[in-house]
Length: 615
Image 1 (cartoon, helix red, strand yellow):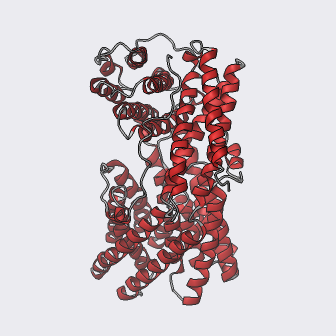
Image 2 (cartoon, rainbow, N blue to C red):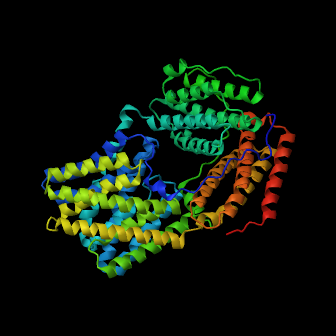
Image 3 (spheres, rainbow, N blue to C red):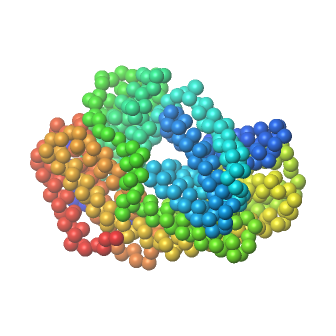
């Protein structure tokens, strides 16, 4: 590598805060038909089983278990099976625990609701459980407060909640029969798509954002395609995916070297070839028909990138020598992740405590106001506060308010038709499909369909309640929950991220120093461990900055001053990651490491001189 580091240049513009008008923006996202239909079936089947067995009320209790399908993300099927069973158990326990507590007293129910909500937020955030994260555990706990019952009566509803998840589990797992490595192939394909997006961004202001996205997708692929998960079926395909995943790391390092050497845009034909490779990671015949274009320049970095991409193409076509195996290091387990979230610099515990505190306040407000459906207040309050930033909380409040108003009108129309039995079940399934189809485009669209869905469930369980009562109660409770969630976020979490930015910068620099020390002393296992640790730290650093930008603080000067420092730390960190790549380690000279050490010292000294406040 001719040039390992450069002075900060072309740092681009810092991300701008998301405007209020973004709440009304329609995002460009594909319609996930398969996901939406399977989510609808997961909720429809418990209702149909209850209907056809003559126990429709049981089906209504079991339908909450159907929502566990939404926790089926892109993980190996073995992990998915265990994960969904765990969610089924936790979901049923969340309902049972709060229902039992609420039977003792209002205060006991409110405290247990807050405890269950805080615990679910803590665990889901610490383990990076994707959307819906802790939301449906809080939903089950909120429902439990509205159905108080002694311990002796809990067995049936808790069992029904668990059993209602079995159809969802089967639907989420059936793909294993026909394509057992679909999740792994999707993860590897996503990694190469991320690399292609980064290559396309070279020479533009989107370079750093694209680099961050590529690093995120590489980490996800590494998590999904793990050597410890070696299956018995289609081992050849799995080995090829593992090798492609390792080679993606080498391509990542080659792109770092290229961007350190020059800011000239990458040949669009090469970017297109990488996208084609991403589409063919699980199809050797298709990959064998692809070719990589020849380099258009004579730079060493460009030649290295072409060579690494050619290796990836050969692996995808099932025609490549074995890669040099990476040094295996212990992977973080669940216990380590949970302990790490307890760090005083972590945002996980403050977020969990903030939601618990506001939910107790919401319970008191709902109790004093005499609302008949307080769990709507709790659930809305939590849903609003689960947004990743203050701006997202404001957007959710706006979207949930408008979606509820329009959805209440739709729900009133549906209830005016006096549906019953099979029509309630089918309408519920259709509404769930529509909500899942539109949620990625705009959260408000999903609420438009979730609102009549909730009204339909309450109507089915309490047919004696009038439509006007249900609609008015829903509107009042949702608006109250939105207001409480927004106020709670603005009071307790307005500057949580911005206060921790300097701390995370210090942490990233410390990890860079440890990786540099491991490289200088020739410790390959320690270097690989620090390499992975640093990559995670750099990803978290950018996520924290984007969150801080959207905290709606009045003082932007500190964040603007931190932007050059962030880019400098990230650029140096990714250069170190490239230097520590197993295939690059032998080419790394002592002079290169010395140059990195000098720049690391300059960045660290610059931050100390600035005397930025620490939390």
